[in-house]
Length: 264
Ligand SMILES: NC(=O)c1ccc[n+]([C@@H]2O[C@H](COP(=O)([O-])OP(=O)(O)OC[C@H]3O[C@@H](n4cnc5c(N)ncnc54)[C@H](OP(=O)(O)O)[C@@H]3O)[C@@H](O)[C@H]2O)c1
Image 1 (tube, protein in one colour):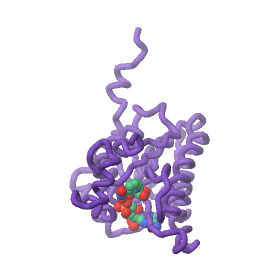
Image 2 (cartoon, helix red, strand yellow):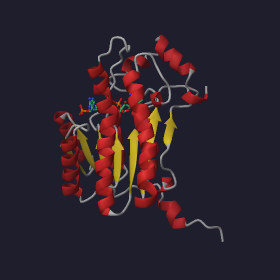
Image 3 (cartoon, protein in one colour):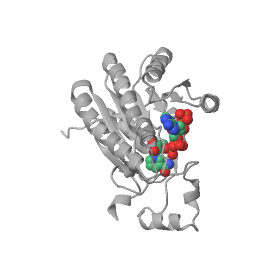
């Protein structure tokens, strides 16, 4: 008898009925992943600091039949994160999936950068990941059913770049944090923690890089075997995979989703 269960294989990518908490839900990727989870049948609980954007997303998704809600909060502030988790559990009873999609960058040469500016990036991109994953982990452990965490970092976690002492350091820290969280949380509590590491994808901040005539775009394509820069929707499948039973044996992984950037 070949030891694989038909029922498991038929359902292993399903996240239907799961509660997904998405941070940075107002952003280019966070909004698309939120909708993607919603289309896949999740109950989607969104958070971010911008209430107007969260409300607009909620209206759009509800009109599409997606079960969703939001709570305003700053992911780097402990009390905000605890309040977001409480609100999510009050609304949906539990949290099964966490997708960390918030983040920021301010490009500055180290010589022009103040310690305060560097710290702001570290707080927004690294400390916040600790706070969000720690308190969601506590909630998941209390539920006793395991869970899945997907932390969006960057390929900049593995490569230095001029003006990126804050961003690369914080993303590298977040990737290592994911390795450690897996050690703390997977074997004992069934919580898988992985990161998604993209290169450039389309957002308000990166739109200018998508001009096919620009040198930046041409330089990027030389490093992208896949032949184009990414759209946020390119990561929906990977995030759902890492949130589903299909990835039960994957944890602590910093998952490349760069279109082949690292192979050139
Ligand atoms: N775009 C790319 O090319 C690219 C490439 C690699 C990795 N990434 C990473 O992928 C993630 C999503 O990127 P994105 O392009 O979707 O970004 P985005 O459109 O700028 O959205 C990011 C969200 O993060 C929140 N945010 C911004 N500054 C913050 C701060 N100081 N503290 C806490 N939250 C803050 C904002 O939501 P609120 O204002 O509502 O809080 C914002 O909507 C980020 O971690 C980013 O670093 C992006």
